[in-house]
View (cartoon, helix red, strand yellow):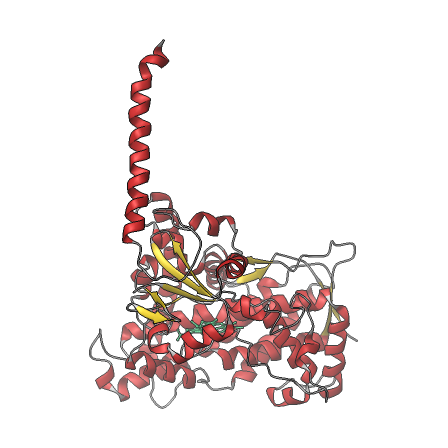
Amino acid sequence: MSLIYDIPGLLDFSTLLLGIVVFLMTYAYVTRPKNLPPGPWSLPIVGNLPTLILAKGKIHHTFGEWRKKYGAIVFFKIGTLNAVCLNDYDVIREAYVRRSDMFGNRPTNLRVVNELFDQKGILSASLSPQWQERRKFVRGGLGFGNRGIEDKVLEEALNMQTELLKTKSKSFNIRRMLQQAVTNVLCSMLFGKRWDYESQTFQDLMESLDVVFHRSSIFFVQENVFPYVPWFLKRGDKKKARLERILEHVRAEIKEHKETFNRDDIRDFIDAFLLEMLNRPDTCTDPDDGAFTDRHLEITVLDLFLAGTETVSTALWWACLLLILNPDIQHKVQEEIEEVIGREGRPTMALRTQMPYTTATVTEIQRYRSASTIGIPHAVPRDTDFYGYTIPKDTLVFGGQWQVHHDPELFPDPEKFNPGRFIDSDGKFKKDEHMMPFSMGPRTCVGKPLADVEVFLLLTFLFQRFNFELPEGARTPSDEGIMGISQAPAPYELVAIPRD
Ligand code: HEM
């Protein structure tokens, strides 16, 4: 009886719901920009987020499916934000290199990023002459300090050796150790100091990096898109709090540097930046427009700290896994190290030219399982014509590095881990211009020279002194990545056996 009475109410409700859905879809259709690249059908408000969330971090695979269906330039929606993914080497090159005046910019419509980074520093700032000056300075300045980069990396390598010997060939997860070594290299370049692995502050920094990199999506997109939904707001704020903790640490270091600054003794990157501010007062007076202001200093250091730690340690974490899964390749790398450096000799970058197989292995690791699969989003600051389509103002642009590195036309049999593809018929290292783990164009990774040194020297040092193996009886770990902001291996354990 009551059901019959309720039917008009139910009808009213479902009619209202239907009306809202029809209205939203009509609104989305009418306001949808015209002449867009092809792409998947999207829902009002949430856009293609359900598909991206169901991809469980493997967004690069979703991009691959879209590429097959829609082509190299695909339009999609992240909530209400417009986005395109570029899935082909030539198309990415066209955007990031030839059309970099448009495509070299960064998004300005992401809440967490805006609130924290404020378009300052390097990473989140859009193109401007001031940004260019800072970038140039950073490129030169990453080598500041009393000792060269190689010394710093080898100092950490020796510390790692001590820690590895303490494991007494027992099974453990090497990830934290790699993260600590790489973070310490950067801390000594930026702050002029390294930390004991046990230090509470250091552990706290590591934990913050974990939250930011492995429990977040690229640029915290969901938290940015739905800041008005309490659950996302809370998630966004949690990550922001972690980033703020790192920033607080950076601020404390800057304060200490200012108190002890001596222009005749430049100790590290912060000192070098402070000196630049003193030498060029014209560039630091205007807080909004200057290239070297206090605010730029703290955000630049934060950028370098964030961008330069997880990326490198993740590359090395992949290296250990892939060389454990391919013991024949590990053996060949060790043979080459032994031939060129010996068991006790000091690895140096100068020796790299004599080590084509090790160089090829490092390159293949970055192709097969790179820490970065879809890059850091770029954005166009106004409506932009591209291959006959119109990319609307503020569209997020993702350069699909994974699609390029796994394109069978460029890298035959791409799912095979094979360093030999980078060796020519004379046994020399063969460079391939399609490799883009650091992206390309004016936005290309500013830390690449440092990353190259760290990855090559740490890998060479570790495999010179240890055999890395799976623990006895352990299940073979998967080499499928897990995506946060970077793509990392699923946690695995290994044993490090000192070589006699
Ligand atoms: C294996 C290690 C690394 C990989 C795979 C990597 C990869 C990348 C990628 C893909 C980008 C985005 C470029 C773009 O937007 O098109 C980037 C940007 C950047 N990286 Fe790296 N990176 C690594 C190590 C480092 C290191 C060691 C540092 C510095 C200490 C660093 C600092 C930066 C900065 C500051 C940016 C922003 C550049 C800009 O927006 O102009 N990276 N990196």
